[in-house]
Amino acid sequence: MSHALIIITPENAPALPSLITRDGERTSNRFVEFFTANIRNPNTRLAYARAVGQFLAWCEQRGAALRDIEPVIVAAYIEGHAGAPQTIKQHLAAIKMLFDWLVIGQVIPTNPAASVRGPRYSIRKGKTPVLSSEDARKLLDSIDVSHVVGLRDRALIGIMVYSFARVGAVVKMRVRDYYPNGKRFWLRLHEKGGKFHEVPVHHTAEEYLDEYIKAAGIKDERNKSLFRTTRGKMRILTAQTLSRFDAHKIIKRRAINAGLPESISCHTFRATGITTYLKNGGTIEHAQRIAAHESPRTTKLYDRTNDAISLDEIERIVI
Image (tube, rainbow, N blue to C red; front, side):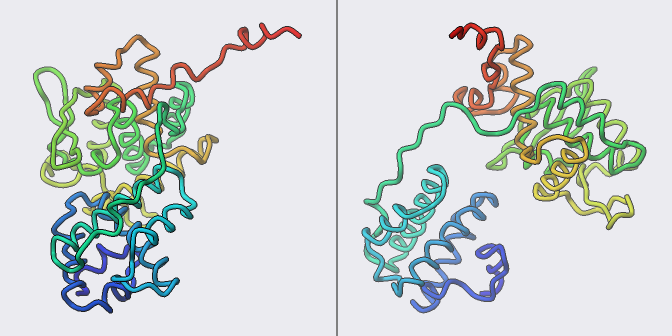
């Protein structure tokens, strides 16, 4: 079953969890199928693999076999979990989903996680760090664009800021996904579930993309990746697609070089773009459409227009 190890264990561990392998080949096969045939989104697959792996390792440390796992054991794991509420809920969802899959496959008779409840969790404002428009401009202007790597990084960040795009959707773009439509250029973003989201390009992002594509010499490579890795420190692009993990490292490095907080992430630019748009008179409804959110409630999580507290208001506290 080595063909599935990369999917099941991101650290490339040499074997499946021992609780699974000790239960026999049928259980092992069903376990592998859960991550390969049942979960299609690679990000969900990775998150659920980590969650399930941690739970099974916890059970292993306490001497429990797969068939010994009961609701009280799952509840004890959830109760003692040190993660944030949203992380705990994700772990419980992964565990429930796995045991459902094993029940359907007639590996075990019942789902021991079915009756276990996770923590209550409600969020009205996101925790993603947001840059002011001045700091966002400072970051973009700090990038050395005298070479193709700097042009690539500026174009990558520019798309996320000016199109509210997820980094996962951006790095999946092909050269053909930046295309003319009438007098303007558009972006075709590769969203979750194999969906495409098309949005017009802001004139600044268009300028960034044009300069990058020209310097990279990839205009005619329409079916190849738009954003690519580099070969070592040689500032030469390869044919390999830039991953979202590569993008995360790029953004961390660029933020530090610009003297900005290390807490900045890829999601920062999505939140920064939405907040700046709303501050300048944009509406939640239109922001939702640009960001391709299913619900305006999701878009509102990125709205930080009310975060700033006026110093004048604070000075009204006269004691």
